[in-house]
Length: 261
Ligand code: MG
Ligand code: MG
Image 1 (tube, rainbow, N blue to C red):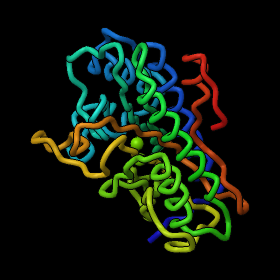
Image 2: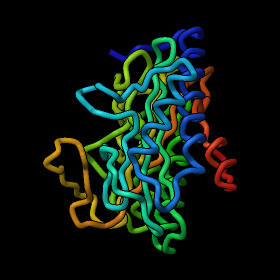
Image 3: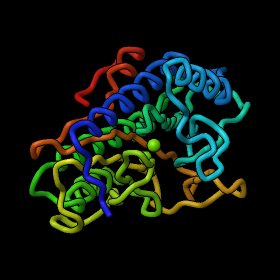
């Protein structure tokens, strides 16, 4: 069942989304060569708790940390390690917070130092995929319209769209109905309705769409070892329009970059 949120619940979602965005903004200037994922994880956890929130991933399904930190060929669900990030890496950081019983969930793939042109292109295209997916989140459309837009843009660029992992509804739970695949057919799937809150999160591989799972039970990597990127926003359907609850504003301010969403 899809839980449609009341205006009061949407406001709670908005506050949780703002906290998760501020958390990514807090760590953004620290994502540099030499820092370890575990250091970033501790800083994020301290910040979330100081702001009155709870790390939503920690303990969920048994995940041990606050952030999923997935460098280079890791797609998602990387467990923070003590292995320092290196110049030229890309690193996907996914954060979940719970605030007043509601969840915010957001991901951003960072460049560590100076990255290759091909890596920068992957980040740009994946972020564009997110923007194009969000543009389809409006009254009259269906879930498949979101996935279709994302898939078209990624595949036109020559990239692979991960199939096994998808976006989702969220609210009091991190993962609610409906699923939001990053692939699909126009006009297919659940019809979008006011009160839906969705995490839209393209996971795009520079090479094959295929993935493999590490023995740690969490880390997901590209099957061919090529790079992978992941950008995620939480959005709500309000009066037939899409309201983006999370923002990259804090990250962009910290990095000196700027984009539309
Ligand atoms: Mg996430
Ligand atoms: Mg998510």
